Length: 369
Image (tube, rainbow, N blue to C red; front, side, top):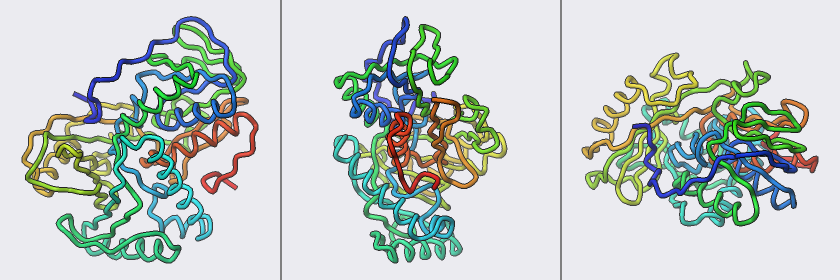
């Protein structure tokens, strides 16, 4: 199976690279981060070639739960404790601005409906209230919530979207603007002067690699700091027996679901209950986690509709929860390791990586001081 609910099979596809090309910058990875980098490079007037080992957004960028959440992977009050109030607030503002930008860029892919964080029990509910208090203290919108989903907090500035549709729309726009994009073109060797692929070589002055999952496999320089996990999901046929107007984070974010406009339910989670085997580069659904997902779907969510999709994606994590953006080799910039929440942060960092690769000042609260 391993096909995300977002894939409607209408994408015509792009050709693979055949022959050699020259570019100012080569971008490896055509998910949200890589496409953001391509867009920034075009705005800077550079000749850009973009490559992906699979289709556009074939990795986590097009296979995630479709949440648009402000902030980093850790909840806001945890980021305040970790980084200080000033920097945490600056990060949160930057991600809110990015959500607004995404709504302008691809309105047809996004629903600005807010999000819910729902507590599994009393301990987590107390943490939700701390989360709520921290957001309100810094002037960010949040409300206490109690409803059919449970108790927790409502964050009205968040949203839901179709991640694969957004990336395809971005890619089509970038092609019209002059970018050269190639699918099914894996990077076999990467240096600051060239990217070698099975069908040809891109000769360039700089390289931006935006792949998230398996980042440490591509760059052994990051081993020990970055680790890849498998995130699993399933989706159903339309389920009129339930109604979830907003995407929901549950049990500290380990479970997450949303109901699509046509009534289908997309559910992910239970990575922590899959054992050590979920720390893997494999990106196919596993039986143990899929069984837990389906049990939760039936017993907790009350969904009776049949399961139509099961899929998985590779996502890179860091111990700190802060993403990676750095020059890992001379002329080669790596961006990724979003710890499971890269939809918003990745778009910001893709642009920053492009600017840094060009030697243009690019400061951000998301980057190390």
